[in-house]
Length: 406
Image (cartoon, rainbow, N blue to C red; front, side, top):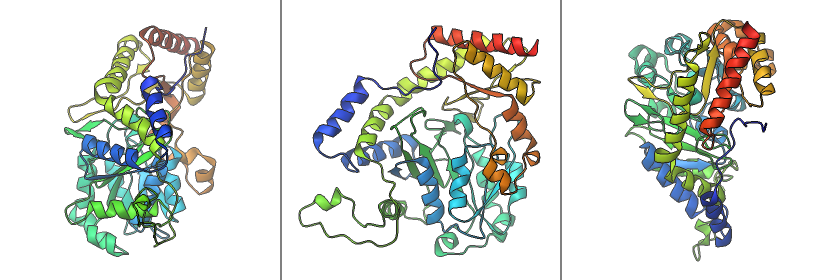
């Protein structure tokens, strides 16, 4: 039996042809395809401006630096997330302030956000885990609450202009998710998407900043400012310098190098053109099959993917096994692999990771995050997963649970 993989990318003739077109055009770095992809993402998500980059991590860090986050500042985020969400805070010299999860949908608990806010808090980074949107109504209400606004201490002109804590959504998983009839990317001040190889919408590697700041901000100007930061502080990109007589440029700051290329954007354009009516439809069908085939087992706890407020992007299927220990969960995973099915875990909470443990964080302070992690198994979800393979996966999962818990 051939191993059923966990999450291979969708690479077909349309994708290959799009990349070949760019290669044959003679222009492969940031150029017209990247701009086209940015415009498509802006229209799709409903945000005000989009800047594409080489990763979501770069996007998160660039926004923090644009907002002036640095030493002495605090940024609130969930303990249950991937390292990128926190590492960017450390890069800026600020302090990650972890809070625990909700027990139902894995996302950050808004009640605990409010308790974690101090005068040093500059940003909140909610994470749409597995593609299910956080409770943005509650989070956005927290940062505009009079009592919270009154303790906000701006340290630069941008922070004074906003006049409150910035909400920066880590929407790495949630392209296409909906919350109160709005799409991810337009749910709060700024959001960042990921287009990594395992994401629903991939550009091999890549990410995008979705700007959605209020009318007191010029989002187009901020996009230009961030674009300069993404190109070593150079005030013209290579494509712009091609205009006859336009070769002169300046370095206006010591920026970074994290722009998206047209090769990546070409893949993204193909993906986005078929995303809503093809990719998401198939992923939802896979989730529906898992729900139908797994729902009768007494130890299976199925993920929250749709409520009257929100609907997931169907990125990761977060199955939990009731009443098992972390070791039993690990044993179940080993049994699943023996049956030629690849599964994963999303995620090991950051306070359990060596760097963050050594920085003074303790998983005992985040009991819901640990409980969710200790029982979680992520099942394969990808476009080309067949109905027959879904049956193989569910059979392997149920047999493995029975073997370990009998």
